Image (cartoon, rainbow, N blue to C red; front, side, top):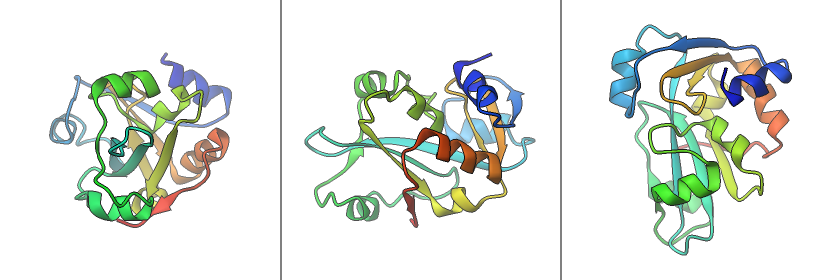
Length: 160
């Protein structure tokens, strides 16, 4: 059992666990996880130019990311970019390929800003890695919203 599963169970958040081969990209996930119900999500770890703000953006796997629009939404007029692997490790204790909304559980200092695309927030069922890329957790909308309430990061819902 992963620490994510332990957290969810201890907070009465019901989920379904699906195990599969390791996946590192949305394309691989689509191939190996096609039979898992729900909205597949991608999780992007971004930073500003000064490396002073970090963002975890959760959006549908098939949705094209408009990084300029997201930068405007979060008040970063200068270019946003993907954070480096060492920053991901430092802030969320994750490796590339294992980024997930559940990574926010590792952000003890609340240094990462969490943003959820409205399509993800409104989906009936959503799916995410439990911070390892050999499994996927399936959550109902109610359970996902309960998770968001529990972590107390606010509901930063964006339309991209």
